[in-house]
Image: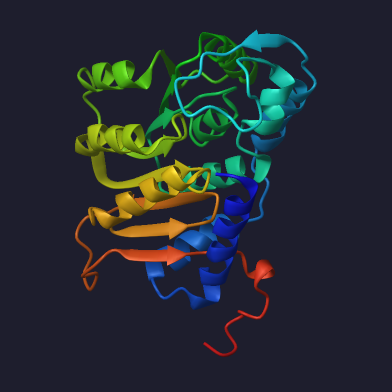
Length: 278
């Protein structure tokens, strides 16, 4: 997606998006209040951000093997750890929001597709020392770096699966005997593979599961992927936050005859939507 199309996509999002004061679903309102509007700094945040800061200063060059849709920032396969930390990892606010979401949903078993440097992984693993994060990464260099980061943070509840998702994910699931509470899809910015991973994971979902689909406006293809996931109607709730989307599967909910889908924006970006005229 070129710059013009990206700007147009976000303009359309902005025009359609509603603030919390326009949200009528009690479930979604509570999730927004407990996670998106929670400004607390939790115990692990400082330590993980120190790892990020250190990575941003690391000029070591590495050669990447890209199994996904590539990157707008690094056109070649050779880059530095600093460039990755600055452009290819989830930002501080997003990663900390994912921590709060995992905490809110009480996620015990988490599957992440796309480890990268392990920053988001570390946030998810820090929610509870008794949870387990299974994180998948195709690039050997990033696997090594992420493992060092996990070691420096003292995180022992992370299992890294290395290799192409197309091969490693079905092999992993074939031996998996647990249910999944949270899925983070961030490793392949193409529609067909992302939909395939979703279908492979679906039988392992717990009764209540949160799926985070990152970079839904990264390209026209990824936005179409997001719309396709919503169109299948298998979910109970969804929330479009512009850069990423959330899908929630829950047991049958009274009075919910169809999925509740919302496009959400922070009220500071639409200050006139403060509920006075709702």
